[in-house]
Amino acid sequence: MSEFLNEIGPLTATALAELGAAGDLAALEQVKGRWLGAQGRFTGLMKQLGRLPKEEKPAAGKAMNEAKAALEAALAGRRGELELLASLPREPTDFTLPGRRRVMGRLHPLTQAAEDIVRSFRRIGFVVADGPEVEDDYHCFDALATPADHPARDTQDTFYLDTAPPRLLRTHTSSVQIRVMEKQPPPVRIIVPGRVYRRDNADATHNPTFHQIEGLYVDRGVTVGDLKGTVEFVFKAVLGGDVRIRFRPHYFSYTEPSYEIDFSSAATRALGKEWLEIAGCGMVHPQVFENVGYDPEEWTGWAFGFGIERIAMIRHGIRDIRLFYENDMRFLRQF
Image: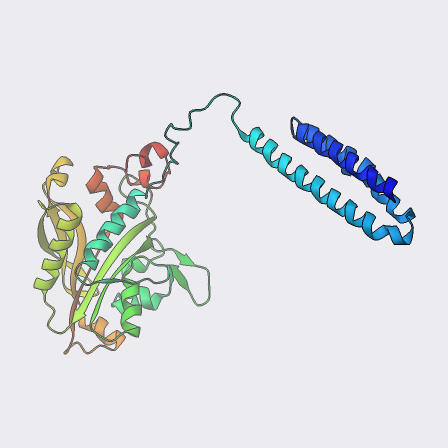
């Protein structure tokens, strides 16, 4: 018994000294294997416990457990020290220097324009509405009083899907107006930003898919004056305080009277034009109100919509709409 216990102390001291002297992680692993591995010296000593007399095993086991715990603690401590040393730079480093900042991304110029437009509408009490991009004929055309023979319903102008019943990719965000009015009684004050699709050939000013934002205001006593005031406020907020607005008579199947909106500013003059068409609008047609269950004798309202790409192009003097979709970082980093 005494001989076995006398052997534990010196072996433990030797093992602790070698663990502390290991110069790197590889050397530490070698020391660990030499003492605590399957064929290690300390492991072999533990195997001798089984040959001790029964009455000597408790004291010997206690001493071995204490020694093993001391070795494992020393191993873990030295490993932590060596891992820290291994992570330090090999060359001297001035830790007082400023750190490298992570490069932050930017919002896409179309996202910036859309958020600015939404922000201006929110300031006057509008809320954002959303709807599906895959629509049906009723919400995209019929409910908006668009006749069956209207050119917009031709396959040359609209993307139809091969489904039953027929479905299509929405040609404007006006379909969301119908969905909102079907679910919500007046008053209604919404804006609808979203992607729309039309069968256009891609060129400097057209693309088969683009972004549109629609506004709808329905209440008692709403007039064209309210429409003009809102349009002027929004475009001045988005395009600058020097903006001038004019309305020209036009035709849309879902508004009566209907107007095209032109605006003039330093931005249009930089493009070589005094006036530039930017949006369509009008008072909601009574038939549209009847289609959604609103009484046109009680409620009036206006709606208008315009392209977000057009706004972004004017703001930044961009002459080719395709630049927004090419993901060229040289272009995107400018915004």
